[in-house]
Image (cartoon, rainbow, N blue to C red; front, side):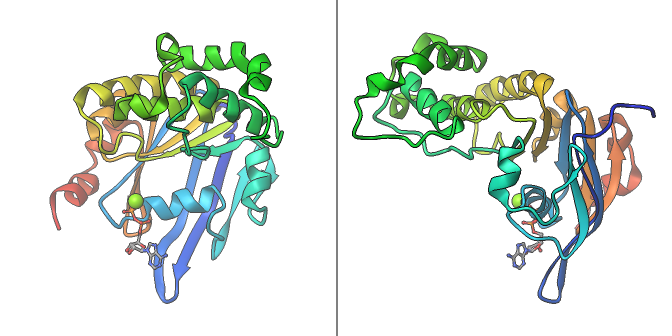
Length: 249
Ligand code: ADP
Ligand code: MG
């Protein structure tokens, strides 16, 4: 109550695929400095909500507001320029290039400069200090000269986060950022997500409930396209309907 205004909010978000109602009347608020986790069983509508918020899908009904601007009818490119960044938006990491050059290229794209491949890479020099800062934020500064292709899976995802941060997101949306990771990578990525969320509003779709419990400030539980419960982890995890949704069927 009386908390800060949401950076991103949706009201009555609804999506039909033909006759099928995939998302029905969902309200969600994403706040600055917080990790908002969207959870729910398979087929609950998480990815559809994610794609609606990032404007990859057009809602059948409902309204989406970013920083007090109605973005419901706005195209994804324009929404991206307003600071909404989805995971791995710049995901094409260049395997043969160093980590540092990968982040420099992301910065260059973020600056809306066309990447000019006929120029020598040294033209990226002036972006290097900032690129090093971003690598440092994701814990990869000491490997800045390594080839991206040689990184472990978890570190590649961390590199992708660095390229995402090059866009200076106001809202960052991550769809299953821990998918496919081993235990150690999961811990590192969870702590990275938690740190990154200090400077933006962050939404993640996530299956790993332990991580959601650890770093999620606000949780929205979806089931069959509708909000089943919302609140902090203690609240939603003790909700009998949530327990049933996860245990049964
Ligand atoms: P989740 O990410 O929670 O697993 P999704 O949002 O991917 O769920 O899917 C929600 C429901 O909508 C599922 O029943 C799925 O089969 C259906 N669905 C998703 N995308 C489409 C689509 N493009 N066309 C038809 N049905 C879809
Ligand atoms: Mg999904």
